[in-house]
Amino acid sequence: MSKLLAAFALMLAAVAPAYAQSADDAAVTKAIDALSKAIVAADKPALEKMTWPELTYGHSAGKVENQKEFVDALVTKQSVIKSIENVKLASTYAGDVAVTRGTATFMVGGANGAVTKADLNLVLVWQKRNGEWRLLARQAFKV
Image (cartoon, rainbow, N blue to C red):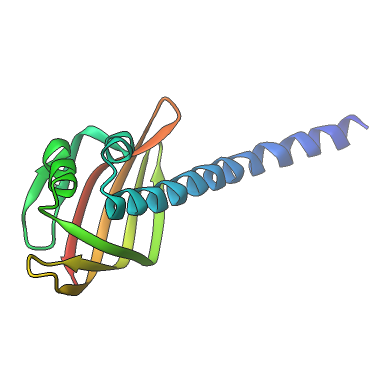
């Protein structure tokens, strides 16, 4: 009986990291979706809650913003994102850091009311602090 218990304990020890990874993956996937919705809604409290104060947010045109600049540009309608479709994103993990890579389609509103489609490759860096995943860095480039 003790051999059976030992084997079971060993199996649980081997499987536990996979479950932890799955929980983190689910949390980061949820954060990606929530951030996309907050960007489209230009929801200042949500944007501030989903990003760390040290945020560095790189646009496909080369502009880089800190957290305040990123949030203010959306809230004041300097940047108008009509929709975001996260086409194919996948994350890898190293401790309290997740790196998400993939493609997304942004529908961007222009000054004259025209909407432009932007297919982008993204690199998102998430950091987990006190059990909470938030965006630390982002870089986009055109496909």
